[in-house]
Length: 373
Figure 1: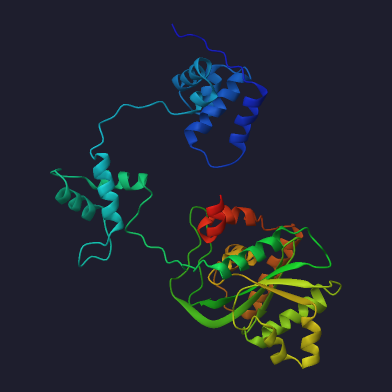
Figure 2: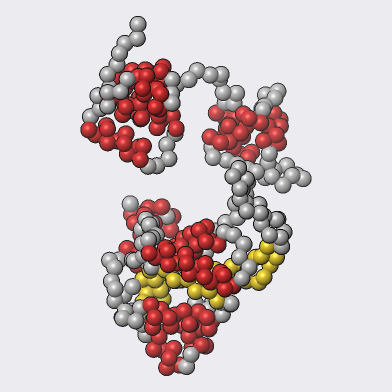
């Protein structure tokens, strides 16, 4: 006869389980076990728990038993499962990883599971090896040799570190309305129109549109983002020349921050992002008047990810621009509507990368500090 196990959670255990269910990515089985423990603690019967959590009665029983005989961690974890011995030894797995990280055979652009399995048969005593075995061992080591990721690899030197810490320190400062920090960047948008009218969505059928499209040129987006308050401004222009950049800087000074003593602008190293652009667009006195209220801070080369506005542009593209828009006037109105709604909801970028974290993660860029520690 089965023993009846009673689950009684402490306040701390109850809080941990509730936190687990409320956020974060967890395995579905672990979440179900947490639900079982909370329901059992609330006094529900095994039958009711099994029905509401959508598990078997034996799962409810085992979870309660492992909690009573052990602890919450044991109840939430997977029990060891018997299985066949691993086909590859540790040494052979290391050989597989080394092969996957090396160049593929001559005449092949990339490794495949079948190619790697054949290579392992030649390098070991195995008569055969399945692609699934290769896939599992590669997955354990986080490898997908048939994929390539294009990446801009920066040169991390003293200049890189100096600019990175300058920007991160700006983000960490207490908000000062007289010295706001504004992230600035630009992004091209291609105007794309439909060749044939899309078919609207119906119950059971998604919207359908033709694969063919028509290019109607490009426009440019200048985007400003206040680091310390929920405000952003998107300006659509026909180009991104030095004169257009200079006009954005003048609008920052005269329209958006007329009372600020100094506006600190975080931007990348584009050639037009310089004081000289204002002298190309305005008379010397006017250019100097604007520049007296601006302070430029540049992200390191190949590190535009340090500019918060890059994240905001990604949000703009995902929420507003991920569709075909062929009319510049329609684009202006749609972007303006998105801007108003996002400002009204108080949306902000949750920036968590600090100077201290940068020094921890990039110890190789701080050789003196690393030696001292």
